Amino acid sequence: MSDVSWPLWEVFVRARRGLSHTHVGSLRAPDAAMALRNARDLYTRRQEGVSIWVVPAAGITASSPDEKDAFFEPAADKVYRHPTFYQVPDGVAHL
Amino acid sequence: MGHNCKIDGVEGVQVFRGVVLQVLAWGWCGCNTYLVYGNDFPGPDGGLLGEVEAAEAALRDAAERGLAGAAGRQGADEATLRDYFTAVIEADQKIEPRDWMPEAYRKTLIRQIAQHAHSEIIGMQPEGNWITRAPSLKRKAILLAKVQDEAGHGLYLYAAAETLGVSRDELVQMLLEGRQKYSSIFNYPTLTWADVGAIGWLVDGAAIVNQVPLCRCSYGPYARAMIRICKEESFHQRQGYEILHTLSHGTPAQKAMAQDAIDRWWYPSLAMFGPPDTASTHSEQSMAWKIKRFSNDELRQRFVDMCVQQAEILGLTLPDPDLRWNEQRQAYDYTQPDYDELMRVIKGDGPCNRQRIEHRRRAHREGAWVREAAAAYAAKDRVRQEAAA
Ligand SMILES: [Fe+2]
Ligand SMILES: [Fe+2]
Image (cartoon, rainbow over all chains, first blue to last red):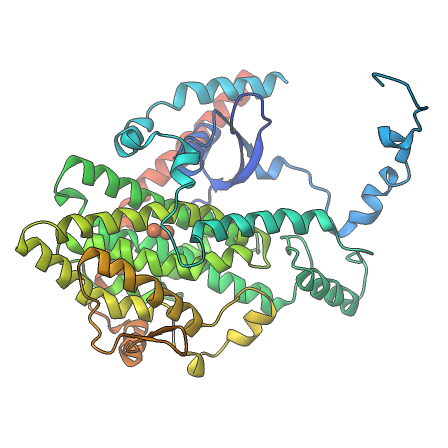
C-alpha cells in the first residue's frame, strides 16, 4: 500500500518559560517522533516556542459544544467560588 | 505529569537541527518573533498587519461576549439549529467544527479552503525553480525559507479543511486528479531571477490583500489559519520588493530585467482577484455567511492603489498607460486584466498547467517509498513497545 493514512496529531506549544502549552493546530504523522519533528518545522519556524507536545487526536475526549449549556451548568450557580462574592468590612487590610 | 516531562525531554534533543537555516535566513534581523512579525509592509490604512492584529483582537472579543441563550443543544430541530447558526454569524462570532452548519456552508468552505491549500502547494514550484540558481547564499537561504513557509501554509489549510470532515488524503487525491483547482497565477513561468522578486512583491502582495479579510472569516479554524499565514506573508512580500529594488538600482541590464518581470506579472496578478463583480457567481451567499467580506473588484482596486506608490519608489513602471489618479473616486483608474485569458488558464490552458500538475504527481509518486518506510517503522515500533510493556 503506497498511501497509508497517517494518524492526526494535535500540537501544543509553550511559547516561553513560565507560560502553559497552548494548542496551535494539528498535523499528520506516522508516529510520535515524526509528529514532533513535523510540529517543529510547521509551527515553530520563527522561534514561537521552547517546548512542544504532540497528542494523538484520537486520544482526546472532548465535550461537544452541542452540550455546552448542560455540561457547564454546575459552575453557573456557584458564584461563591469567586472572591468578589464576599463583602469585606471597611478597613480590613491584606484580604 | 511524568508523561509530559518525557515529551519535553524528547523535544529538547530534536530541536536544534532545523535552526541552522533559520539562523542563516534571519541572522541579521534579530531572530525574534516579535521583530519578524511586528514590522509590516505599510499599507494604505496604517498597515495590513495592523488589520491582521485587529482581526485577532476581534476574534478574542467576540469569544468573550458569548451568545445569550445559547440554543445549539442536541435534539433541537433544524429550524432552531439554523437560527442559532445565523445568530452566531450575525454576532460576528465563530462557527466551530462540531457546531451545526448548513451543508452548503460546509461544502463552500471545503472547496475554498482546499483550493487555497492546493495553491500554496503548487505555488512552491515557480519559485522553487530558482533555489539552485539564486545569486547569493543569502538570497538562496531566504528563498528556501519562503518556499518552506508556503508548504507550511498548505499544511495549516489542509488541517483547517480536515475539521470539516474531509481527509487530507482525499484532498491531495483531488488535486492530483485535477478535480480541484489551484490559483491560476502559478501556471505562469519564472523566466528570470527578477521573476522571484515580482512574485514576492505582486503575487504575495495580491494574496495578502485577498487574505487579510479572511482573518475575519466566520469559520474559526480557517480564520485562525489565515491570521498565522498573513503574519508570515509580509516577509514574502518584502523580500520580493527588496530583490526588485536591488535590481532596479543595479546595472541597466538588471533594471531592464526587473521591468520585464513586472511587465509580465502585473496583469496576471490583477487577475488573481477573480472575475469582475458583474460576472462573479457565488459571491453573495459567501458575503452573507461572512466567509467573504469584500467583492473582487473592491480588493483589486485596493491592490492597485497600494502598488502605484511602491512602483514609483522602485523606479519601475506598471505596464498600464491608462493608469491615473481619479480625484472624484479617490482611487486609481486602471486597465482590467484579460478575463478571457484568466478563464483559459483556469480551464487548463495556461503556459505551465500541464508541467505543474505533472511535477506534483511525480513528487507524490517519488515520495511514496518515504511514506511507506515511515509507516512500516511506526508499525514495527508499536510492536516493539507492546512487547516491552
Ligand atoms: Fe502562502
Ligand atoms: Fe507567500
